[in-house]
Image (cartoon, rainbow, N blue to C red):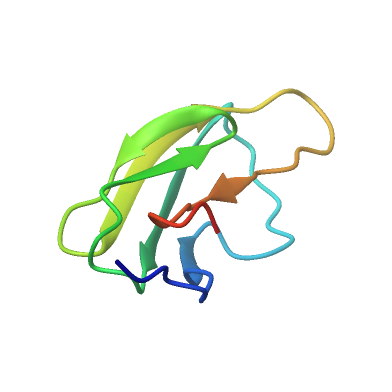
Length: 77
């Protein structure tokens, strides 16, 4: 058994960095470069990854919002 020591790379396609939106909901979408990853976490909620892509809708609060997307490979990285 060997451990994968390389962290997965996440590329966000939506929303654009530092976007200003006028709606309470926004689509968060992107890709993960590790074909073994089947779930990412978007602001603490699990989102399925299919063929390396994910997409979900989150509700924003008024003011500044931070969107956090986490992908963890089988080695916990």
